[in-house]
Amino acid sequence: MTEKHSRQVRPDPVLLALRERMRHSASHVMAAAVLKLFPEAKLAIGPPTDDGFYYDFEVSRPFTPEDLGRIEGLMREAIARGYQFQRRVISRQEARELFDRQPYKLELIEDIPAEEPLSAYQQGDFVDLCMGPHLESTSEIKAIKLISIAGAYWRGDEHRPMLQRIYGTAFESPEALEEHLKRLEEAQRRDHRRLGKELDLFSVHDEVGPGLIIWHPKGGRVRTVIESFL
Image (cartoon, rainbow, N blue to C red):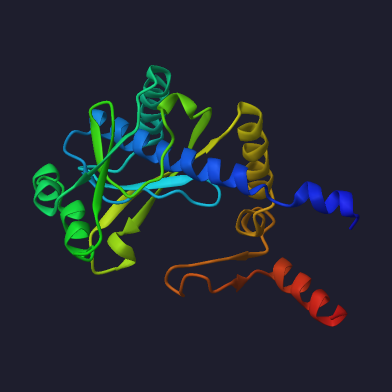
């Protein structure tokens, strides 16, 4: 690898920090949109990730792809309005009163050490328990896309409630977002789980156990050839 190429692929820490704030902010915008469509929703957590963000919700029914379209539309409206992200430090009592109808937030409040300050961020009418950081305004979120829906146990514990998780992503430009979506599409096209099924190589059955491969005749021959080569 040349020195020039090495410089090109090295992550820009400033850009990475911007994306983290943008995605964290986008998760709050998404949560506000969900509450508009599902006022009874219980909010869990909504952190940024390396590739985007997610937020976990307890709702009366599973989200649908049509819901994602409506949520994304409300997000775009909020972004266009340019709501300011306003931070304020709150006391334990204020926090309990502010989130008295949000059991997951109340649990988080009780788990935060007493010596740590609590803060809340507000954009428009939406307020969330959060340490930040965020952008100055929703208008700084330049490009968003909601990706998928999944189930997730509260705090990763199978004995706790199953929540609905919405995954999304945000980028500093529509071009960067489009490039990311193309990479996701290519990765899905090469996904071994899809290829295994389409090419009749193997299958997975819940009765046997998730992740345990059942080789089909074609797949068995391919495996034998690879093992012989190795």
